[in-house]
Length: 193
Image (cartoon, rainbow, N blue to C red; front, side, top):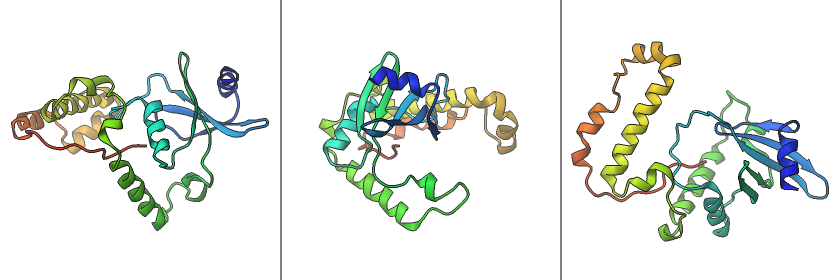
């Protein structure tokens, strides 16, 4: 059934916004609506991915945080199937260019506060570059590396903007020079989608 939905999502359904995934809304007879999330090959990754998404979603759901239920996850081919949360999406009642209703800000703060209270030892294993950053200084340097990688990736289409803003060719140089002052510091989750 899951592979059949994956195949359907390649050719039909309503595509929703997404930077790293093609999110396709499909109607499933006898079940209702689902979203099939298919990674976009070659998508420019500007966010750091600290955890694999599926175990993190399971943890958030287990702590009753309002996340779309993960119904199925596959690594090959890479895709996920999610249920939908009740209600309307922000895009449905707040078109691009209009003010976000005041309660949305408070809702986001409440969600982030709840996520910050999760037991750090219950979090999934770190993934990718985060595994090789065991301390604050290493994490800081990996962020500097990521900044320079993004600079290089965006340079072909953003050279004029970089020049206008005076962005140096090594944007993390000054940050790297200050790594010695980082020391040991507590870390917390500060952004997630």
